[in-house]
Image 1: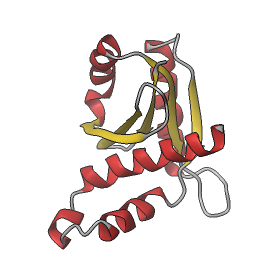
Image 2: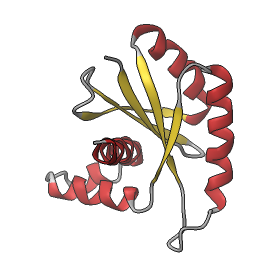
Image 3: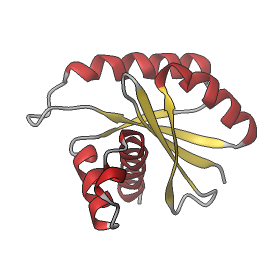
Length: 137
């Protein structure tokens, strides 16, 4: 089986997570500068088979689009253009950053380490992927 990949897209940084080939466990992969996302994905997809890309969809508390929604929509368009054979799905990403920060606290990371925004983005991508896996079953 191929992996699933989650993307927590941001203006500056983009967090990435993947499953194992059996699609059972979501693991943080890395965080890349957003302008390097497509080259990174091309290199990764050349080495690993990815079945589906899951992208966090920003929504406000009321469920409506936010300012970031347009950025993610554009990202999806670019990904589909570059990788037309890989399906792209969205998952509501409300509260993932807060959940990621809480995960860092719960895992005992020191205060200085919790300021690492790249790590927050990677953990957020992992949470997005876990949510997708939970709803897929």
